[in-house]
Amino acid sequence: MRSVAVLGIGETKMGRLPDKSLRDLIKEAGTKAIQDAGIEKERIQALYMSNFNASYLAYQAHMGPLASEVLGLGNIPTIRVEGACASGSLAFRQGMFAIASGMYDIVMIGGVEKMTHRATEEVTTGIASAMDYELEAKVGITFPSIFAMIANRYFYEYRNVREEMALCAVNAHHNGSLNPDAQMQKEITVDKVKAGFPIAYPLTVFDCSLVTDGAAFLILSTTDIAKKISKKRIIEVIGSGHAGDTITIGTKKSITEFAATKGAAKEAYNMAGLKPADIDLCEVHDCFTITQIINIEDLGFFEKGKGGDAVAEGKIALTGSKPINTSGGLKAKGHPIGATGISQIYEIVTQLRGDAGPRQVKKADIGMNHNIGGTAATCVVNIFKGW
Amino acid sequence: MAKKAKIYTYSIIYSPSEEFKDKVPYVAGVLEENNERFSSFIEGYKDGMDIKIGMEVEFSRFDEAGNVVYKF
Image (cartoon, rainbow over all chains, first blue to last red; front, side, top):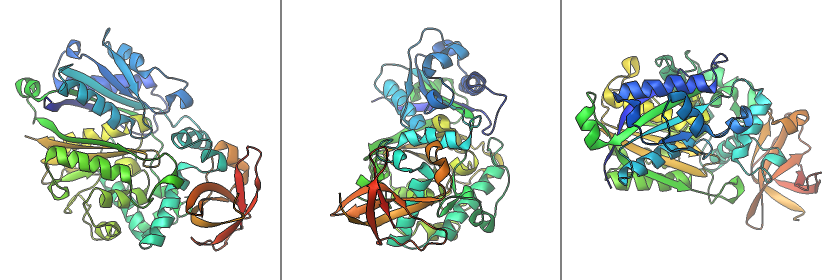
């Protein structure tokens, strides 16, 4: 396998962007990524485009050719990749394989989602297509309620981490307030999180990730090409893993640890020859606050059942021993579903390059992104190293 | 269909999908019977009700779509 590097990154500001169409979002983020890579767009040999829900929310499928037309990529092959909320990291992996295999030397990865123009109930219905529609959505289950059920079970098997869940939101909002691309720009308090409008007990609106419009793009190349043409720090992909699990919540062996995360992490750690302690910072999939606590346990950063303690002790803060979601995460930067995994990688590359401004962490040589789809039915974990 | 099942986990839902707009707040959960788990609507929720994991619920009926509905 050939070594792969992230040559360029670009993203839009995340948020409620009523004046920006899918085309506008693609144009802005894609153009930035090409400029950041410092290449002519004619050198891009393929486009892997991630999108989850535009077929439902915006009546738009076939996102590959749409993005290619907007960016003027000519007749290159394009494909849309979909794996619920993990779509972005899945698209990334397809591009990585293509370069590692020798098929292509330079490819583009993109993700886009437009969600905020629809009513909350419609967005809830659209997102519910990532579970089993017949067995789950049709009996009234929503995604917030799936993770609320996971939280209640976690309280039963370990302990009640309601307070620590709120602290995850506080940390996310603080980091988001330091990220100009984040949807949420304001700090929040534990009391405000707990007193928020109830979505699905025990989750309030402030335990939930955001409904977001946005796009994020990457340019990947062989590491050799990156070394030749890039003036920026070389960011190599040193580990990548992808694992799955059953789609329904009732069929999983455990719902307080995610087999897909553990499988994907193991594969990524093995490929990189690293262990959890070697990771300087990580963007984890905090679709809900409880998910963040489970993720940081499953990734091996903290002991099972102790993730909440780590949060309370400030270990996940920008200045902590294991900074988590320095971007603000899905909770404060936003969750434009198809773009989310790519936007996580955008943050890791930004941190490894030392370009994160007021939210820059001190030691940023090895970063990870962790991206879950559905009820932890799909998971991708990638590890990046700055040279 | 098991007459009785135990609550493996649950949530009280306040923000529904379009189909369940008229039913909030309502409870849905994962139920357990003979080591098998399945998702179900659980009817009969009243505000302030004390719901616990492990508590027993009874089979109530099949809904219009043919899905099982249990009750408190």
